Image (tube, rainbow over all chains, first blue to last red; front, side):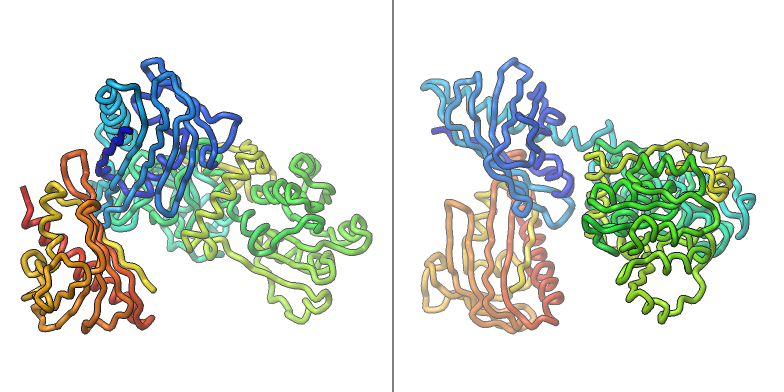
Length: 484
Length: 145
């Protein structure tokens, strides 16, 4: 029996290295000897027992099976099932360990196998040098992404010039102006990112008007964007220059070309999520996630009333609520929007601009009302919401498009034994573990086709004022994005 | 029970690092904080079960017992019998692994122990940084090529 052991230090955090190596099918992307690879039977590449079938650049064909995978121990164990090479009983174990003084990773790779007599040296070299040492170098190159880009961090550096949309004072859309801005290099815990797409949300209107005092003018607006990491500050373990990323967080400042932002609010985008979709979906998708899975855990069979059902969050709520097995009632302001809402899974749409919907909700629920109401309308719909609620129903107020809710009489909830919630996204995303769980659930819902964002409204960054006018005129449907 | 884990890369072959570490009575020779050390009862320093009795430069006295020693795995573990640190059920392990790429050494040092809950953070820092990391740093400068 031959035993081959090789080990190396990789100048990148263990999370970074493991994210690549735990994917049993990733080797075609980073190993220089592998030409192409596929997991058989469409199984997930982290499913123990899955088989990767791949060809080497020298023409050999190999099938290997994943025997064990541990995210806790950073270990992957696999064996060769069959190969055009005369190797028998090949079992390999790859393990990573954290180097705690510096963001580096120890990588240990070991195997045992048999070969025909007299060819031991040949195969020891093939595996040790060709596969393992070649793999170390291949992964280093892969992590570097772009030639010359540092593996871990590039703290410091000069301030960068960019342009951004600034609210010059609180007021209407005409207070928005494009201005030159200077972006400082990332400090500890921060990253500097170049935006490729920026999401427009109703909260930006509230901030612009001064209704939410999140800025002191003049200051740039915007809560979410997607783009690419330029530089990483000290103590940031999960991001590297060149990563495709997105974020949705306070403080405002996303309507800019380049920005320095808190790294713990930034997530790496999976390959199946493009930049525009991410910019359109981080804030709205994670809002839908907590509304449907956290504030109220929506169950199959419940009746849900979604206001502004053709809006950015509304369409996502309809799509997701329907997939969860709920009966979905929506309100929209026009027939056109009603069509969008229906196409997104709305079973019944109430069309009108007068905030009268309670009677219609009772008509389609045999007088029972809605078990949960997702309300972004605010004051104009308050009385009708209480009327439309089923006994023991849950009224969730997450936005106030028609103006802030007046003081809600707690006693009024006793009419229905109702529950009232006033959740805010940023309280959920403040904990990075929760943030990544929320983002992952949104990305999974995108991949499986539950969420189907249809981006019809794209504006140049300089046309942000027009985007705001369109959003406030209630003539848009689905997400709006700005392109810097 | 809390666990403290510290690891580093030492720019010397594992055999050279191990020669220093396997001497259970050798702390005064490579750590910055041990003033003097002896093995109780005149036993050999590589006899499993032997007890090292050493004095820190700040005056503290510590007794530790060798639980395992493996020249094959470059690994040893020991427990604390007496110390001023206020820890219980303390077992530590020191392990070396060769890094074939560059003929260096990956060194790991971890400990598991019980203590009063309000002291966990401070003790984890004192042991992880004050003991393990500072000993690694001093070992690295001794073995610098």
